[in-house]
Image (cartoon, rainbow, N blue to C red):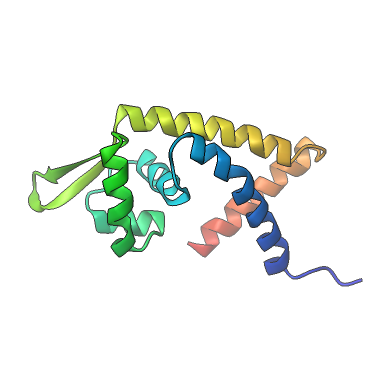
Length: 138
């Protein structure tokens, strides 16, 4: 029998991961895109909202709503860029870092449950290949 296409295989996995992540993010008061933005900011401040849109993959016209919500809840801060006051530097707040760390911890536990029954070597190889493919896609 021929194996299924990668699109079919990965689509099913992505749907399951999203289904399992949704309650974790809801408990933290986050939407999926909020989490993606927090993860992008964990790698460093965004010099501009345009840079953050590129780093997160979020459409820049929709990013503002996420940033407004995240700022209102104290998870991110926007400040004028001293070099160009027309730009806003976006950064994680200490509260944002704590919420992100808690979500990541819970997501890792969910992933461990999802991957239960798979040998540690196969898990490591699976994650390594996903990282390689993700880097290629970027």
